[in-house]
Structure formats: structure tokens, C-alpha cells
Image 1 (tube, rainbow, N blue to C red):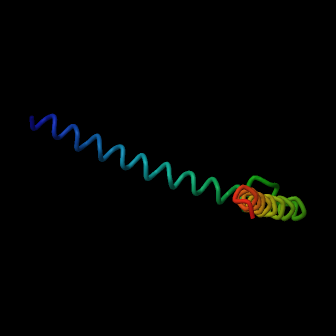
Image 2: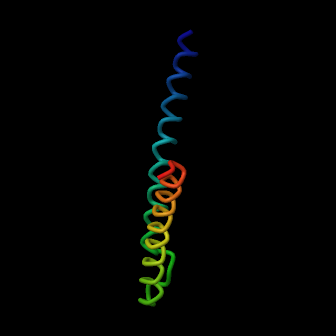
Image 3: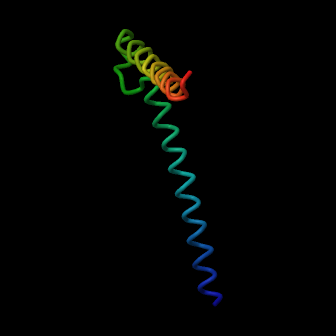
Amino acid sequence: MSRDDDRKTESRRIIGRVDAESEASMTRRVQNHMTGRDADENDWAELWGTRIGRWLGLALLIYLLWWLIDFAAGG
């Protein structure tokens, strides 16, 4: 039974580590996307246009979700 318990403990440790790393990776990807790191950094217009466009898109999404909830609630 000791070997089985050791394997379970090791498996849970590995799964926890992978879960923590994937969350950090997703956070990093979202941050890089919203700051426009995939845009050409030498072209200031493209960089700032990308950043502004993505943040405005997020603001529009939040507004539309709010409007949909408000509309569905009958208000």
C-alpha cells in the first residue's frame, strides 16, 4: 500500500504543478495580448492602435453583456 500511496501523492503533486503553470501561462498570454506585444514595436501607430482597439473591444463586450442582462431582466 505504501507504493500506491506514494504514487498518488506524486501524481497529485504533478497535477497541482501543471495546473499552476497553465494558469500563469494563460495570465501571461492575456496580458501580452491586451498590451499589444504581438504588434510591431517599431511602429508607434500600430502599437497604440492595437492597444486602444483591444481595450475598446473589451469595453464594448462588457457593455453588451450588461445590456443583455438588463434587457433579459425586463428593466
